[in-house]
Length: 296
Image 1: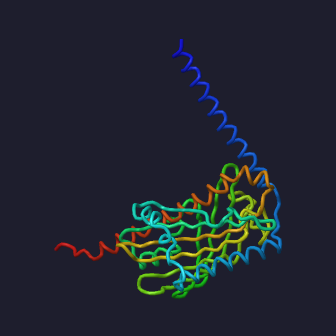
Image 2: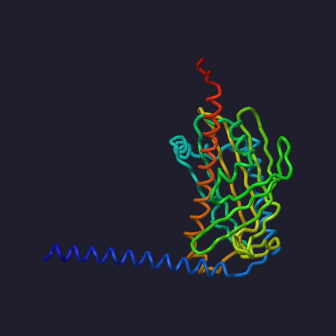
């Protein structure tokens, strides 16, 4: 009888956990759908807070480039570097409060890093400059990339990308300025700044259309990225720092959706770093294969 009682209790507990998780998931779906229904307009207070934050982050980036702090974020923590050397991708939010609440908006600041054994700066440059392959490298979220202007160290291009989360599909057309700078033979950095963000309504439907800038649901208003890279330890360290601006949510909704707000950027950044790692490995393999003499 005791065994039956224990088994019954275990069954009840499992059923409760499954139903509880299902209920939480259903609530999240409802809240995401409700949150997406709020119209959003970008306020000048929000823009001012964003510009101030990006200016501060840029100064920190310049300190790294000038040697006032470690060039690589990975070098700030030996345990973090060991994780990278063991093949892990490390992604963490930055700042004391995340996301950072500003007037009518949220600032999301993330750092991700990966180590690519055998990788070289020339491989990274080759991958980054191959815009025609972006839809293959970064699928399924990145749909299309087109270059407008290109020089040795600066590019202007557009990206069409789609993010699907639960019941919500968010599609965007973005235009970016990218700058590439080699500090020396082993170190360099890149900057990516969005100059245009337009939400695409009814993506994939007959009435698909772009909204005007700063209109829409406010999933994404602004985006800035810094990348740093260094050849060392028999490979390439690559770090990507991403700062985004989105609309704010009501306090209770923000609290309930915090797990989703934290999970999506972390997953997206880790996926992008992994996809870049795979593309660089492929280029490194091609480069190595070209050096092997063919048998006659």
